[in-house]
Image (cartoon, rainbow, N blue to C red; front, side, top):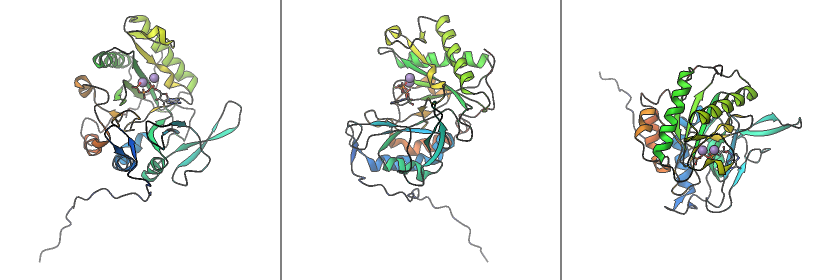
Length: 301
Ligand code: ATP
Ligand code: MN
Ligand code: MN
C-alpha cells in the first residue's frame, strides 16, 4: 500500500490581509510603476526585510500622490495607521515621550505602503532599548562627479580600517548614490559614546587621506571627495533600511551585498522593485545568509 507523500506546490506568496487601495495609481512616473507593484514588492521581501528593519523605531518617506509630488518624512504617529503599525514611546529632549513607529510583521510594512510610504528608514537601535546602538553605519556620500568605483574603493578602505580594529562590517548599496558600511553591534554602548567613536573615526580617516575623504559638514569642503557621514550614528538619526524602495526614478532599492559583489557592481541603483524574487533568492544564499550578523562591541579608539 502506497502512502501519499506531501508534495510541495509552488504558489504565489499569500497576499497579506492588508487591503491596498488605488493599486493602479502610478507612483513612479518613469516606467509607470504603480502602488500595487510597490505593495507586491514589499509583500515578497517582507520576510527578508523584517529581521533588520523590524522592531526598531522607523521613519517613513510618504508620497501619497507619487514620488514626483509632495513627499514627507514622518517620525511619529499616535495611532492613525491602525494596530499593525506599533508604537514605542521615546523620551524627547524636553522630557516628554513621543510615540515613534515600528513594525514587526508583514502586515505592518504593508499598512505603511497603503498609507503612501515608499521609503523605510530606521534607528540604529532596537525598541527593547533605544539608548543602546545595535549598529554603526558609515554612510559614504560621494561629491557629484565622482565615479561609483571611487565609492567602492572608499568602502573597502573603511572596511579595512575597521577590520584592523576588530570590527566585521557589511556593505549595502543605497539605491541612491552611495554605499553604507555597517558594523552590527551587540547593544551595550549608549549614543554619546557611539557618536564620539564614529566622529573620531571619520576625522582620522579624513586626516589620513584628505584628498579622498572629508568629515566636514560644509558642502563647499566636499568638492571631489567622499563625505563620511558619521551623523547617522547619533540618537534619533536614521538610515535607510535594507530592501527599502527609494523615491528615485525607476524605483531602485537598497540592497545588502557581499564585499565580493560590491567589487564588481556597476552602480548603487543596480536593483529595482521588480527584483523582489531575486532578493529573496539571494538572501538565502550561503554568502548572504549571515549578512548583518556579528557579535561584537565597539573597540577603543
Ligand atoms: P545616497 O546613497 O544617495 O546618499 P542615502 O540613503 O544614504 O542615499 P543620504 O542623503 O546620505 O541618503 O542620507 C540621508 C539620511 O538622513 C537618510 O538615510 C534618512 O534616514 C535621514 N533623514 C533624516 N531626516 C530626513 C528627511 N527629512 N528626509 C530624508 N531623509 C532624512
Ligand atoms: Mn548616503
Ligand atoms: Mn548622508
